[in-house]
Image (cartoon, rainbow, N blue to C red):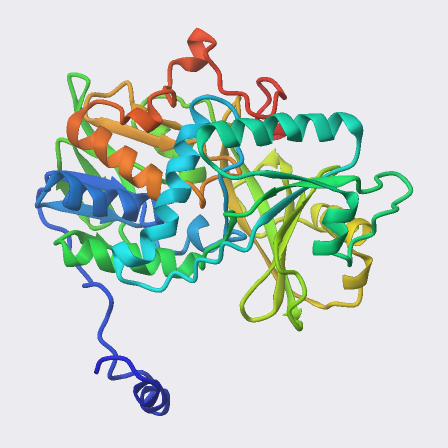
Length: 416
């Protein structure tokens, strides 16, 4: 038996020397059928589906750091399908359905926990807006339930329901929403892709592109030149920088989003909870830590550490909603680099360069999109045509005006 309690104990005493690596430490070949830049969740999922769904035999994932060092390991692990705009709605609905069976598909325990997502509302207008959203979710085939104040109090009695400014009036419950262990997602897709022959090449930064007559023929990296006629970019907050190296601009800004975790506590937050009058969301991990986050830092940055004013803002929201956690000690925080678009929705499309494909603009929603994003991006790279679930995520919508402005905040990157 490869895995057992006795094996875990023995390897703990031996320093883990007997475990087999999940994937090979591949060296770059001279040429591939397709290259995926970015060894995060989206890039690894894309490579896996290129091999599984489209039969590409020679695929490489190029990661400038190590697998899981980017946003896939720097998020609050939430998955949901709470969208109401055409384009977003069918995409995230598909992604949530894929999450529900992904552990079986990849043969890896992803710790998927459909604990339910509660979106609190604090006014009559907000209640009406959430009722419309819930109806749209039901029409799409997802689940939603509008809870009044007393029904909500029965589920989560520890909230401050009588805040002076924002009394809690109820919530929209999305029962199938929940959390997934983020590191396990990266490891599972990496192992599954490797098993299908994908080369996962770490410590390999793309420094330039080989272009001729408007078409790509390969990439330049810190480990040498690699040829490929199809290249996909899935580098999150570095998308604008990498596009610049290819000679074009993207309508994205890079912002830092912080997250926090407390010391381990006895289980009491049994749902994912979002604060309707402030961008704050919280859940409790399997180890007991409260995991929470809030707004981006509101100015462009490539830092991965965040700043103290936004940390204070998030803590204020936490105390407003849940005063009981005021004495919990915050153990650590981290930052991920968000690629923010003007309408808050992603881009999965061809670039102005033939053979170079884009997967960017995930804003706050990148982690929960991983399975459907990988499926759709692989389809685009392999066939040259958009997958039906991502057909609206066109780059040219910022010229035509066919925006997918889920929050209704207009063409302002940092407000999404």
